[in-house]
Image (cartoon, rainbow, N blue to C red; front, side, top):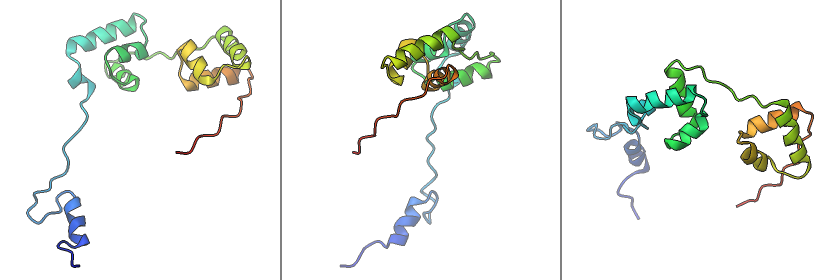
Length: 138
């Protein structure tokens, strides 16, 4: 059996601009930046609400965007992004819950914190992490 197209020819077709007639241009898709997805009024509202104390995570969820993208948008608008500090009382409460059997995910949900923030708070108060469960192979 003879191939109609040689593998090298297929490879050249897969490379952007690889066709002899130049008809295979580079892909042009790019995810839309937030300023293109949110109007100027919405951006002003997000900035105002964040500066009034709302969390970036809740604002991002409300507007169906990633929290990291929203934080970048705030920084681009000269907003000082605050980091949520876990108090010693909250860290000790997390430690009690963790030692009583709560998982990291349980603590993240209960205290509305990221995995890293929970981990750092537990580490700060001297909690040794439990061994993680083995991952299931698929």
